[in-house]
Length: 121
Figure (cartoon, helix red, strand yellow):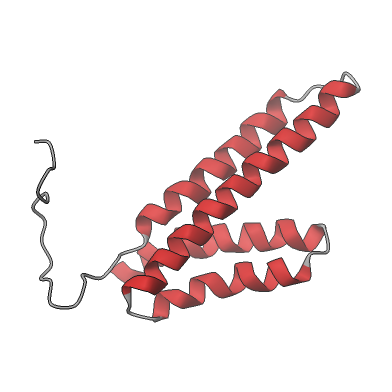
């Protein structure tokens, strides 16, 4: 149940991103968006990092989309504040969902909750 709850924000972020790409008919990006959460089944460090990178790139896509549509609305004198809030929240939640991805420890490294060397504390 715990792993399901960890995966939920990742899957939801990927689905919303896939819908965004589907609307603009970018089918390879739809497929990529839907494939990224499947990497959660691979219990390797690289797969977790790829999922995190995909989510961060997805958040950047939302920021790019926000800038594009807000700019278009500003040009024609239409309100853009609500659009900015909605897409800003979507971008933030997509980026934050990267924190839900558990990165397994490197081989030979035991899991630790203690801060590493050089961590302020």
